[in-house]
Length: 228
Image (spheres, helix red, strand yellow):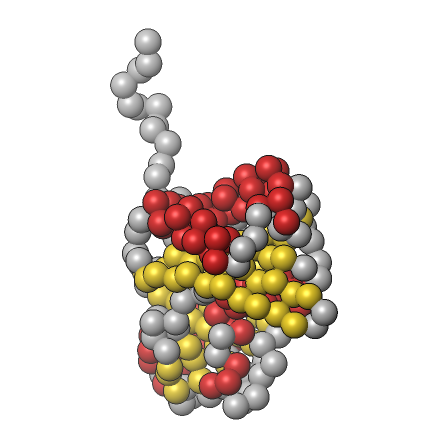
């Protein structure tokens, strides 16, 4: 199976090609941290991984993208690219939420115990996912305040990862819970997404953004200047 995976949902841009044949896999990855500019960076990055993998687009079996939550614009970039490429190549589609991808990246650091992925969503809110020690999602992804997130944590959860981990730990300490924090720069990445896609062996009819909050842009009210 030949899989192309794309992520632009948060503070990075990445593309990966995973090739599996006879039980052996090869992986080619490009990744760059960036707060913006993913739209310009993704396609050259995609071309690089395809060239290095010596793979033609017509040979792709599956194209995967992270679905969110994350940046409103960023989430749409990878999804739009994946959907367009699927139409052009007849490859199947697959995707999952960004927090699940992040969770799979930290399994070696959670000691087999439940953990939280907590991302600072700004404006006093967190993107929160709770996972068991094998990375299976127990709750989320949610958009919650730190005060509402703390009661969701079980007594056997003692570590949180991500840019919002410290915020979550502070809220938990107010409830007499001690949460360790780790990897504040954690981001979703296409390599982990590709591995999840291979493990899933599933497909989706289409990919839809997972938005947990409304967009910042607001339509003009009726009190605005009338159109002619």
